[in-house]
Image (cartoon, rainbow, N blue to C red):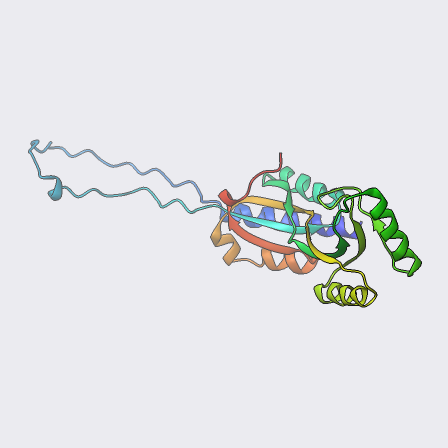
Length: 218
């Protein structure tokens, strides 16, 4: 409940800051037409000065907040932001790849050789099992390690007992829950403490990127 209350407070701050950043409607001024119309003459293009009266369009900024522990928290924040007129959506972003290292014996030529080798390993009190899926199916797994040096050390110990093995690198990644707020102005982000509040109070990471780099979750 404390998390939800904090989220609600911060959405109010974000909404307030977003309203401050919206440009006010310019007032229309009446310009009196000249009493004497000048004669139309030909001019060179280089002699014609074109006055650009349109204001430069400030690019919109997107920020992503994460990582949320569950969809309940992220959906609560998205709903609160949407109710206040802010563009927000949940995102599933891939996390950084984690590497693990498996010590294994490649697939055997026959089931008999595989069973005999597995029996020898287990009789030597070496944890092992037959790999049943993946490209190494039919081989024997002898342990998965988070660090390469641990896998190398285990491989050396097995070699000392007469068992030749290989090491396979396994890259794994998972999706993380983020919330993206779109349409924020650069002036708002630079002139307020919004990002600091979002990151410090909620203990979330804040990523600021151009909106076009984000793809909405299907």
